[in-house]
Length: 304
Image 1 (tube, rainbow, N blue to C red):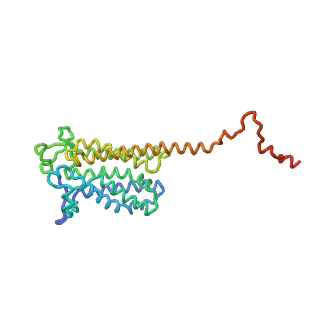
Image 2: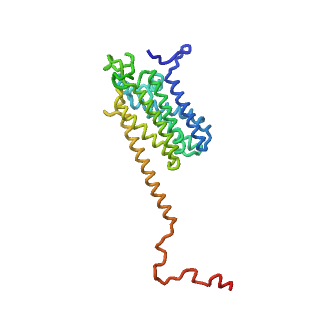
Image 3: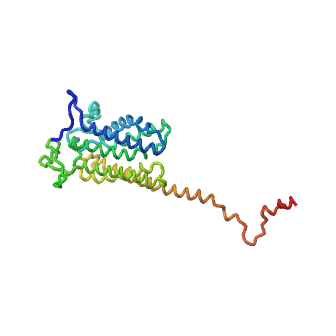
């Protein structure tokens, strides 16, 4: 059995909470290092961390309320249930946080913070994006201790044992599953590495916001395919809400990234062409045109 926490007196401390906090601190440290390299005060990162945490938790909870997993819906815990039992919305310790909502909530808080301190929002999100991927990677280990976010049954050597109390009813007799949380842990680490590499390798070609847009492509693509292994999706109108959102975000971010560079390159080319003298204004061969130099006496003639 895997313990999910420990007690201090009668108060229980969950490993999930400690891991989430650890991931946030590691992300803030990485962002502060990147901020210094961009010439910004690293204290800005630590000052905004509490606001990002609060906004991220609120956003994650709202996302869960709007998109409860199928297993909870079968128990009658739906969005309507939460709306008619508002106190239950606050019971975060009972579980129920969604990563898409956490990212959205954190982005809103970051935008407000950037505007307040007169810092470019695209620059800020580029600084934070690799750390965000790191926080997600670390945070997934909280799912391990909670025995959640596991995939379909499997007999692979790296199979994950799930205790009977945490299994879905239709899989009550199945003991081993895909460690979906671990797959996403590895994928998020890969995402962080790619973002850091892109930021260094193409520093002279990137626009502000490109790294964050790349994050919005890489993470949703991986999450989209991992959702096929998930046994307990979040359905809305018969579709997987998380998977559908990931597809929309990935496509939208890819289009935005392509267009901003295509039109940006075209605008730069036009601007560069505008600095070249217009050859159409030059006199045609054989035409009788008097230059400005021939319209009056030469300076040497005046001296003479």
